[in-house]
Length: 356
Image (cartoon, rainbow, N blue to C red):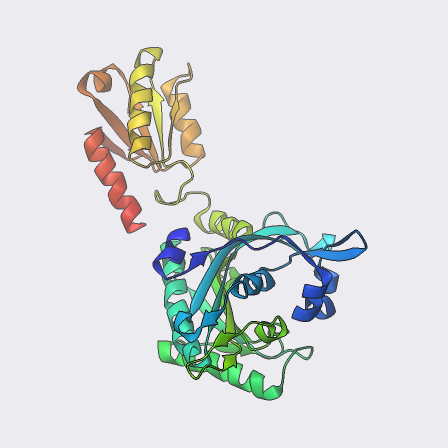
């Protein structure tokens, strides 16, 4: 996800974790979201732990004088957020009170909204394909009863999202009353391998918060204008998305995504130095590898790591040690035979690059 940010023009930033009540009042969160926020007090001042990253990103935007030439300005943050969810709603890592978002905000002019939304749609769908999701339902959540701003602003924001999706050739359904209090949003719902639907990504158009927090830029005619802010996330809560991935792949992650991509198994203690060398060379090539040097039968090790669904097992005995090769076995039990480390590194590299 960091590579996706970098390749698409985002600056990675880090906003403050705890901010004064007055900021949350100006943003509208204190009035509309306070019941879901953790609050505290210090030296007669009230503070809240951030439930979302957007006000902090506006503070970063406001730290300098901005020109229309800088826009669109894209910030991204893997930000820790806290929300006071009812205990009955908590569920494993799928719904938690403390989570990390791949959160981003785009500060732009009204004329940028369509192109930024169409670009985001392309990026989001490409990311979902990489993770193995091809059945993606797109929805637009429209104005809720409790909201900020005028009907004219909501009309413009909702029309911009419809135009952006239409320009992509996308099909969508609409959800009346389910938008955020500051703007409508596109939602991306993924279907996992057993047909369950999960909401992950969002793209929200916000005409409200930048003005409420004093954000402005110098326009081409030297007047001060308030930017539009687009709130966007692709995977949403990283904890929740990891849970979705575990369920979708049933723990059998593809090589590029697996936390441990390969394990080196020794048959006897004699191969331990060679196994460590294999492990070191693969790590130096950028792979996530570990060696199993335990004094256990090789059949026991193979079975244990097969149950753990590690993608590749590399078995080294005396024959492999002498030939400077490894015997390669896949998670499914397929025997790929002996390979040199150079051939193995090339094969694994192809798997990772292709994200198969």
